[in-house]
Image (cartoon, rainbow, N blue to C red; front, side):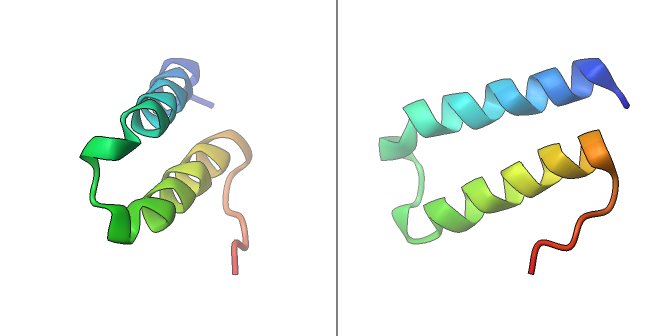
Length: 50
């Protein structure tokens, strides 16, 4: 696992949540889900998210 990469992805996730008002609302939830999935993938490997 690439710890610095995971840490950066988590920080970006938090920044996106805090800056929600500047993001495209129509795809905000999908964006967050995909970032979450990427973080989980980096930590645990391939996951079945659907």
